[in-house]
Image (cartoon, rainbow, N blue to C red; front, top):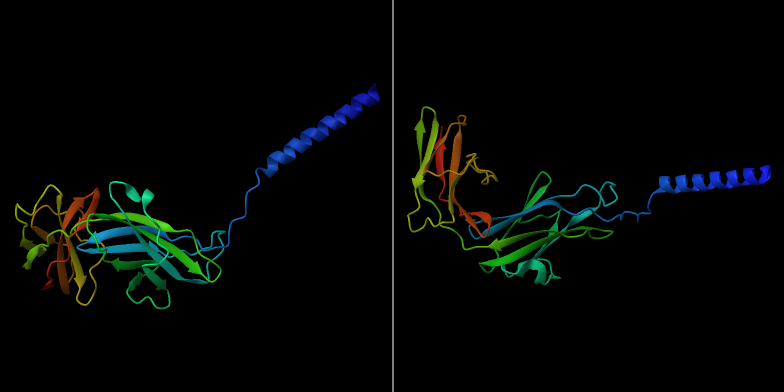
Length: 250
């Protein structure tokens, strides 16, 4: 009886050790692929009749290893009806743009962020932009963003500047009552040095409701000011094209 009891004790101990070992191992997971990671922080922004598609360049592969052979990206554009969404939109096999990192051409790079300007052909139409990272060894999953392309809103006119003790006052002719529909939000003001492109962010912290803005955060130099009207259409914020530039030496 004692031998039988010892034998069962050994069996029970072995079974418990087996269960403990299984708990440590956990579920079996498939290995991560060595393909490039997808682009990140993808955005689409309408300015006038132009859409700016921007994304960040990935730095790693899917398995976390450094990405050293990234050639570029394939950018696709698919259309869909805004009322049905992109569930039924057909994915195009032909890229709208092949982005070669060695020859960016009309793609702008700021640090690790790329921006491409597109002019969709039809207003009041939904567009899905898909971005695929491309290396010699393969392609990533697509990163995407949707946008409903609207008619370009009216542009503010006759911008002017006045030098004041506290800074530069920028003012312009306000949009008429006929132009200011329920979609109208206000104005954005952009400032840059002569020879530079219009920056991504306006100098006003909140949308300007008046037709004038005082720029107090400025140092001596020559600046160019641009004004855009701001609208909310189809649940998304869009801007007009640029006003005429006005130059100020402060």
